[in-house]
Length: 171
Image 1 (cartoon, rainbow, N blue to C red):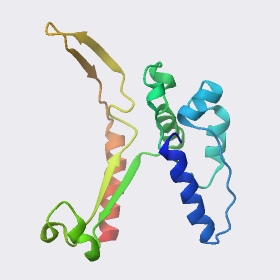
Image 2: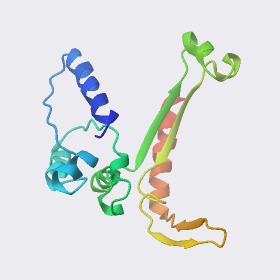
Image 3: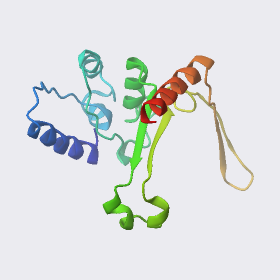
């Protein structure tokens, strides 16, 4: 990953090694780092390594240095390319508040106490992979952008299946 993404991965690897698991770790450039090295945010060698892996530890991507390059070469295209190539369509985002931390929340402790939710988000349709339709200049100097958000029935059904199964397992 880029920026803090690389820092987080280094620390996560320390945790994994402390667990004394039998792991084989390989690293490959991705995002802005890969673009700087190869001109591609998801080089073929990185994608091949990801496809061959049992798991991927992925840091955040993105860097203001790459904000003005063409869309297809921006660092975040790496995560989108991995999602598409590996069929990673469901994002699971758990949120749990431990009793000891309820008072530390910016939300009142009595409201947040006992929170245990799981948000399931679809990752391969919508504006992530939609094509920008148009950008127009308005009379008042602002710009207006329109992107497509396209989903197929099967994309919705598969993420709903994951969400319902997770709900069933969580009770």
